[in-house]
Amino acid sequence: MKHTILLFLATFLFASTLYGQDKPIDLGEVLIVADTKLKDFSNTQETVTLSDSIIRKSKPSLTNLLNTNTTIYFKENGAGMVSSPSFRGTTAQQTAVVWNGININSQLNGQTDFNTINPTVFDELTVRSGGGSVLYGSGAIGGTIHLTNTLNYKKGFRNSVSLDYGSFDTYAVTYTGEVATNKFNTKIAVNRSGSKNDFEYVEKEGKNLNGSFYNTSVNTTIGYKIDSVNSLTLYNYVYDGERHFSLIFPSELPTKYNDFNTRNLLEWKGDYANFTSKLKLAYLTEEYKYFPNIDKPGFSTANVESFMAKYDAGFNISEKIQVNGVVDFTQNKGEETNIQQETRNITAFNLLLKHNVSNRFLYEITARKEITNTYESPFLYSAGASFKATSFYTVKVNTSKNFRIPTFNDLYWQGSGNPDLKPETSYQAELGNHFNFQNIELGITGYYNALQDMIRWLPSGSAWMPVNTEKVKIYGLESQLGWNHTIGKHHFSANATYAYTVSKNDKTDKQLIYVPYHKGTATFGYALNQFSAYYQFLYVGEVFTNSDNDPKYNVDAYNLSTVGLDYSFGRNKNYTLGFTVRNLLNTAYESVASRAMPGRNYNLHINLNF
Image (cartoon, rainbow, N blue to C red):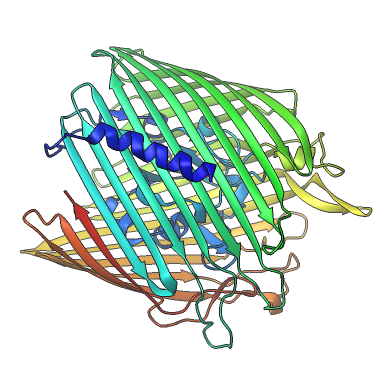
């Protein structure tokens, strides 16, 4: 009940600021962006920003968006259930999710469940491949996913409503609104999603039982320009979700999982000619309740409170040289059914340098060192260069050392936690080749990653405990292709990705479980006047589910097709009606062994902008 009240109050407070505004908004240039390091110090690695149109086509979850438009592989314990990524052959704990410049991976299990994030409530979504621990801390080994909100200080008022309804009583309602003056801006995005998720199995008897889920999220951004150089911005995010876990067998006990997360970030930014000052204060909470039998009141629970303070001083020594010094402090307080209350303090020092030697050549050097009494922290670094060899060819090279710290569960689980764990460390190198021929863009990147001290939970007597054991070698190839062409009123587009990934245990020379050797995506679009259509294709190769790579336990390869049709109408084409068919060929497939996914399903949506 308290969660519902908080969500209602957040919506009410924002709505009161909108009352009486009636001018159309001019989007203009974005002036306030929280995560400037993503743009300033990612020039020697691969970054892809997904457009609004792609995000709208891939609703409702972040899993679906990234699975069908990037090289990241996902395994889902059924539709809408727990979703874990494998970015460049790493694990879910080695992929960092960054919200407005803040790493938000769980302090309990070290990862983010991508099915609990609705991408439509964020203004920008960027994928940054490769190591990023110097900038974003623990877990940024395979890559980082950036969820960003932006503000604009041009006068106006804008609203939009999106309504979705589809198979299995799946629905989503999203409202976004913004009101702005020259000195003040308030923006909100509210989403409510849910589904009975009771689909019939394909090619076998039965249906998905106990698979329903419901969630609400509120994302608010408030900005105030103190004067021409100083501004204050408050970012707030609230998520409240309930999810029943699908059964493999009807005889199993039905379970469910409730989670409630809040994120609050206050930023004071001063832009003084050749000097930029940023002070960030953040307070984050995560709380869950797991019910092993939904018919009984008993549950296990955990909660973590995190406080972060970060100061970033940036100097433009000249037009070509930029230097940043960053100091940040993080305190995590955690408690759960199996963990006594524990507190962890971490202080980090960062130094970053970018030098644009010429219009064709630049290099970046960054370093990070943490101080904590919980574990032995390694010295981290990243160094890279970008060279534009010709008008159509650019080469990028980067090397880095990255890490992942032990989680609260790893360190403090009663009877099993291991306070002597060392962080996982990884040494990486990559070479990127980028080609641009008029309306065609092609990127091909090869990479190598040596991972040490992987944390694994292994049996020790009658219990299990985490230890540093494995060494993993990862190497592979990623490619992205984009094409756009217009003939008269006919607009054509195509985008494709392909990843070849080898991720092997150094001792056994076996591929890690749930890491496919091959994954590919493709999207083809066509637009004429008010009509637009697209076809989307996803291929995922077979994966091993046993560490000995016994093929009889493999999850088979599968390919999926999605088609969609949109019609825009209204004076400024500000209304859109659309229809989507997912899994067009009604393919029977599993992402995780024994976890069937839905067959052909349908979605009807309407977007209203006013």
